Length: 376
Ligand SMILES: Cc1cc2nc3c(=O)[nH]c(=O)nc-3n(C[C@H](O)[C@H](O)[C@H](O)COP(=O)(O)O)c2cc1C
Image 1: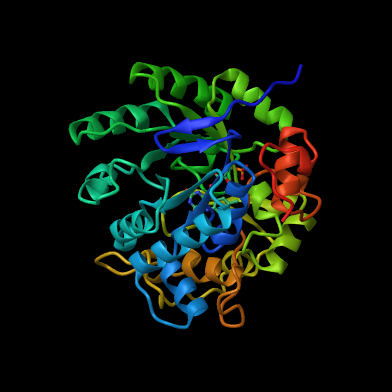
Image 2: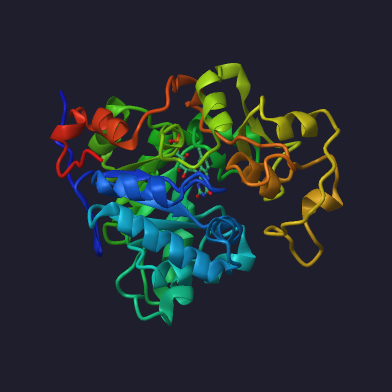
C-alpha cells in the first residue's frame, strides 16, 4: 500500500513534502543544493562547517563565520523561490564558530537551525538575543531517547523546547553518535528501534515531531518511517550524489563506483572529533592515514582546542577532517588529499541525478507532477 505524503510543518517551516536534505559538511550542502531541495517542496540544509573559507574564496573578499552564514542562507532562500524551507546545520563540535554560524544564519533569514555532532545544549541561549529568535525552528540531532531527555530538561530551563528532533541511526554518513564502532553495529541501535524510543520520549515532552535519518534510500524506506510515526525523513547520501551538491566531481564518481567493501566506520585512524566517522576507504587521505604516512599539520584550526588539534598532538591516530573534507569540496584539492564521507547506502547509488528527479523518485511522481515543482 502506498501513502499520500503529509506536509512537514513546524513553527514557520511549511514544506509540502516531509523530506529533509541533511546538512553535509564540509562544503557539500551549500546554497545550490539546499535551495533546489526547498524549491521542490522539502527542507534544504546548508552546512556551516568551514563556510567562512568557502564563501570568502567564492566572493573574493574575506568574511567571518557570521557573514558567511548569512550570505549562504540568503542565497539558498533566493534559489528556493519562496518554496519549502531552508535550514542551517551547525555542528556542536566546531565550537569556535558555533554562535556566529547560528546568528549569521538567522541574519540571512534561515527557517530552522539543525544542530548535532554533540548535544546542542546552548542553542536556545545562543539564539535568545536575536530579533528572529521566535521565528526560527530549533531542531537538535540525537541518537538516543536519553539524549532527548537530557536536552529537553536543559532547553525547558532556557524557555524553549525542540520544535522537532532528528533521530539519526547508525547507517548515516558523517560522524555517528556512539563512542565505538561496535556500538554503531549493535542491533539495539538500529534506526527503527531508536525511532520508537525517541518517539516515546518526544510524546512525553508534549509531542515533538521526529525526523528519521540514516539509511533511508527510497520511497519504501520513507513510507516505513512515516508509518512508524516519523513526521519527516532526512536523507544525506542520496543528496550527496546530485548535480546540485557541491561535492567535487571525483567525490561523486567515487560514491557511484563504491562497493560494500569500500565503506568503513573509521575509528583509528579516525576523526579528531572522537566520534566514529563513515568513510570511503578509497579516499586518499584515509589511505594515507591507514598506511601510517599522513602527517597532519593544522592550518585551518576549526577543531583546535586550548591544546591545539588532537590530530597534530597524536600523529598517526587521526586524519585531518578540515583539510580532507575541504579538499573533497574542491578547496585546494592540489594541496591536501581528499577524505570522502558517505552513508552505508553509498554502494546502492548508481548515478548522479538532479534534485528534482530524486525528489520525484522519492515521492513516486514525475518531476513535473510534483506539488509546486518547477522545471528549472
Ligand atoms: C557527505 C556527508 C556529510 C555530512 N555532514 C554532516 C554534518 O556536517 N553535520 C551533520 O549533522 N550531519 C552530517 N551528515 C549526516 C547527514 O546530514 C544525514 O543525517 C545522514 O547522512 C543521513 O543518512 P544517509 O546518508 O544514509 O541518508 C553528513 C552526511 C554525509 C553523507
